Length: 249
Image (cartoon, rainbow, N blue to C red; front, side):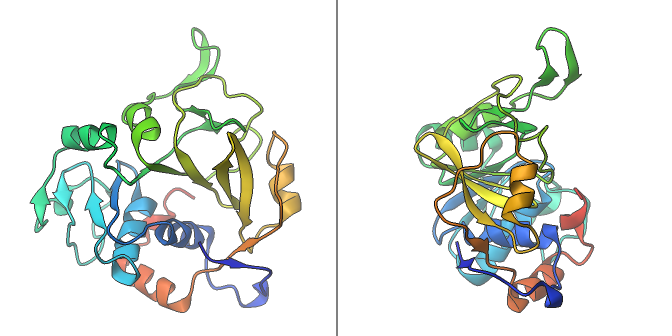
């Protein structure tokens, strides 16, 4: 991950979705095996971007089972469509992804959730009491297996507020090898059993992160996420001409 000490926002030509995708892409190393699920346009683009720039030998796994799919660009409103199987290098079904992860061979899993607390607990199940919830959500699905077993779980969330980053999650769906949580404001890393601030995005500030986080924000030094480069932005527009990376905002 690249860091900067500060940045001039007057020339900013990127959005939160752009910096999230670029931040995720930079966390992918060459030759790593990387998986993303459904409704995962930004992680899917992050894998494609990383393979185009610094990680050409990363292995891209997905829900349809296409290994290293080769779509010229995203043309459909999906991150789990048949185009990820068409012209792929091989077929690796979802059940095998879970087995791969449980054998300790899945390097990175991109996942999400609704609530997170400082102890790295992830809630994707209910808001409120489990038996009489205000909102019942889909639940852990693959996350309950992949977050504890993947070598690194990288989580993204397009909302950063006190209802998302809470003192204590309403329900612990899963927890485990959380490497980073990337939001529109910052990146948290999991260190010594706690979420701590890694970097702040240049369009945000330490004050804004603190104001929108229920638990105490711990940090050793204020660092800023490096903004997307012109090369990254040019490739993103080529890979995603219909701007699907921005649909969650």
